[in-house]
Amino acid sequence: MLKLDTDEFRGRVLRCSNATVKLAEAYGAKVLIGYLPDTDLLLHPERLAEVVVREENLAFQLKKLRELTGFAVEKTDFNKVVTTALEGILEGIGLDRCAVLLLSPSRRMLQPRIALGDGAEEMRNDFILELEGRGTLLKDCIENQKLAWQGEGADKAVLGEQLARKVPASGFLLAPLQVDNKVIGVYYADRASSGRDIHPEDFDSFSHFVQLANICFSVAFRH
Image (tube, rainbow, N blue to C red; front, side, top):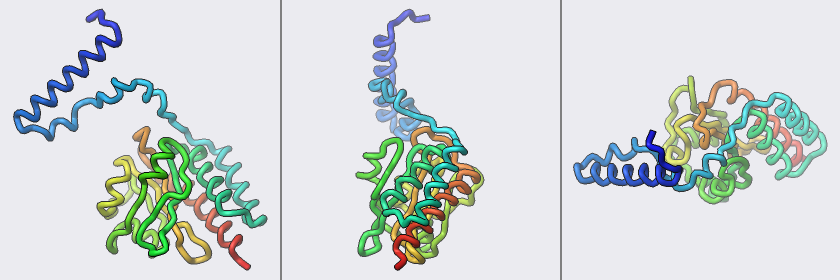
């Protein structure tokens, strides 16, 4: 073994990585740089401890679904319904982050209203989407009120440039937020920070939460 302390070893790895980057640039092989290890984690090792891997919790799912069922009877306010649904999605299904995004008055842009999970504050500030042309997944979700997902075993969809830049390669979950039959936004969730795949059973559980939340909204706004 090299018998180096942690800081010295980290420094050598950083210097080696930086030298490799310069060499790749000098020989016109910048495409290889993306395959080098992420040295940012060496500079900030505490970030490794920040990743919380949430596992599926069926008891928690049931608890939150029962709460939502009660809200449908009580006509609970919008924020409480959204927060409860997102809590069930995040902790019950075992995802990394989730959010509700609302349409702008022009219905051309989606902006986060409530976000939970890893990097929630960053998501609220940065996860802003402009709607692109027909045939894209996001447009189809809103115009045709379709729930959708991407991940292991899913048919590949046309994401559009805007959405493709925001979502992880491991997949995501998407659904329209409806009041009666009018779509006013979307639900979104993924496993971006842990890099785990989205599976069909995740989509099934996600569908239960968003459909029940939509019923709550329709009841609450019904005169």
